[in-house]
View: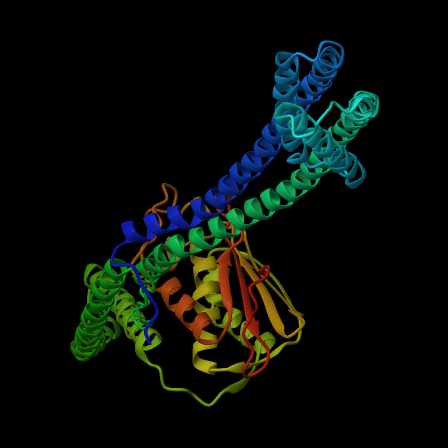
Length: 492
């Protein structure tokens, strides 16, 4: 089952907004629920307070009125006083029912229930008096009923006190509930904020990941890496862009192969006539075909020197193609770097003496495993460049020491140096630094590109140590073991 993927980057952004807003929405809903619950409880308490206060006040007043009319009936025996007493009796029963609907304490509720039972007996007396079901008025019953009003007033007073205690309990409960809800709300809010931050991080990763994949792929293509496939995971439109970019990678790889074949063919084809030119120039310069005057010998020497330069350029082109496209694993050799560097310096001794250069060589014993020809080419190109770009009478040097499982080397000269911003470009094919003081020094622009390719193949690293300063300093690190790869740490 394939994972869900948005159809476009815009859809992914919208999904991200929804996901990030979800915890905030839940937090808002929780807050509103808490506010609604607290406000509802507060309104209920206010309603209870109003009903209880009004009802308890009316209860005492109605009890006094009923007692007064019953006393008047006892004295006058007029039916209108009895009717008024009966009317207040009914209203008092209604008030007692309202009070019993409130959340009173058990003891207060029992007092009211006892009061209702007593009043039911009193109501039966009033009805019998009204209907004259008894032959003569029962003076003792009326007197007992009148005396019971004192007890009922006490019960009403107890109900009022119980009602006040009920209000205090409800308010205390509301305060406790509010504090607990506040704590829970704070915890929930913190959890929602944390969830929002996590979701923001997740969505930021999901949004940036395909963009980073595209950027890395473009960067690899810009550096000439046409072997690594372009893989983009994300929305369908970005995956389609990645697929087109991978098609471009394959097409560039094909063009690069064609270019390499063309350069190899041209280089090979040029070597044969160039050898004839060199041989002919040597014969002329040696006078084999006849004596030459001074001007003719000068022309012959120019031909011989330029043919040597041209042969070096052609060999550089061949080496560059071999470095980039020869992927066959070679049997690693054991190379003594100290002896190799001393040999290369010795081979350039004539040029060093003619330019009156001072050589500063401090090399420790270091044995590395790798392709002997490629490692030799690395040091030949670096040292020859140092000699070539140093002005007469200046110093070139090489310092080498071992650091753990790697050999660290610094090769420096006294030339104009590498400008800031070009420390990466100089390792690109055919790129040459233009300097005002050494503009006459020309080359193929492949020497450092070959060095970079060979260093990479050996598992090492190379970089410019002092961009923007006089005298170029190249830091080179090569692993000592066969399978060693230099970690991404500081260079030499």
